[in-house]
Length: 200
Ligand code: SF4
Image (cartoon, rainbow, N blue to C red; front, side, top):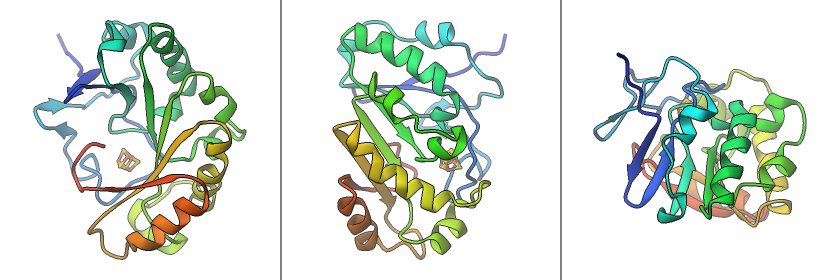
């Protein structure tokens, strides 16, 4: 029988792997380089797990520092599942983080932040670059206007969620970390420098 790694643990954080789809094709993504491995975990999915399957991976969420929606795909593409599962985690005393590309409002064509604010403690947005040209060359977005919409999302998010982080990876060609920091902080987000191949 095929088994899928729907959850995995790093330190005292539980990660939920709910989709392998996203609208970006980042040059640094292990998935686009042919591997979905995180340490010993293989996050290859190839299907859309149901909320019940994800819930079955979580027991006593309050025992973890955080329960994080993050796999090799964009969790907010499955917005309803994120909200359904995150609400249960919150009811059980857990802390919820969503790692996102910040394109949910573009994809869903409306402001999803009020919905996320009902059940998400921390939103961690991959900003990745300081301008559209650099973003397009390293993230290869499938949807036009992605960089601008991501930045808009970074600006809007702190109005709904108190802990919003925006990040970029140090050492990627063309990425200006101090310019990214400025963009994040001007928008009320905390800036994080990520390390390549390390799950934040
Ligand atoms: S958004 Fe995430 S999963 Fe998608 S290609 Fe980029 S790094 Fe990979």
